[in-house]
Image (cartoon, rainbow, N blue to C red; front, top):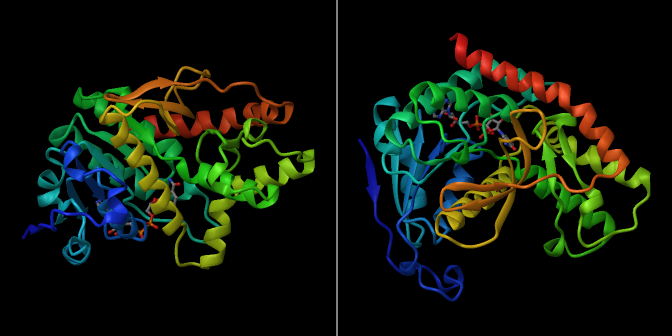
Length: 339
Ligand code: NAI
């Protein structure tokens, strides 16, 4: 049965940050895959977000426990758990933002593309339900390989007649989070002040951090920049190896997913100048999807921002990533249309 637990109306003073949660509009957020390694901490972080009024936690198993647990946190949102396909429609209905961390994670030795066969099918069926129950929601795709799952989602929505390219996002925020952390550590500057765009896609060499545009400026050698770039590209693998068979990034991914969903909610609420990098339908290169800085607004994507000036090293990286990204996009489109 569907679990509903209402939380107390008053958020803690820490979370209120000087304004009352009652001044924010009602916003429903659904997390699909909410009982997983990413889903659980992401559910908690979304419960802490005062912009959320309703939090729907969906998974094929385990959501009653997660939802009951999270619902006891005394913040604004009402939490409900939904389990099994017959409850997916209810979970989605009325959602403003749907976050998808459903699927299998990598094990050591696997690439994100190795996940394709299982996760492509999961994403396809979840997006079919989104088209039916909440066609206007902003979709935040976390399930890998993002370079292919986002094109799959687009094709599913096109077939259903609900596709709006302004409302589909591949979540690449973890690449930005990693680039900022690694850069700040090496430059010995306060990480809170650091900004770095990460463009391209979300796998290996398709992840292209633009350290030449980093702020604050740092005087790094070419070798330093190459090492930082490689560490950002291999950040996921670093975690997969450290977890030694027990999955991939979950806690840092939940953080990154919460940051991106918060940016989407702020955009919906009309907060000006909300900018995050994301893998979206794009015309800034010849590829139909590309990650770059995106301005978020009341309808989702307000503007896809260009790449800005690139260093020679970044220009080479851009050229090198295009064939792989192109084939990952095509693989997703083919999958969606053949099955
Ligand atoms: P996990 O295995 O711990 O959790 C996945 C959850 O999805 C499980 O609870 C499972 O029951 C659920 N699930 C499976 N099929 C489902 C369906 N049809 N409907 C709803 N839920 C379903 O995996 P984890 O570590 O949470 O990773 C999830 C995904 O996120 C993986 O594809 C992983 O590669 C991806 N990921 C993406 C990152 C990014 O930067 N975009 C970073 C890290 C992981």
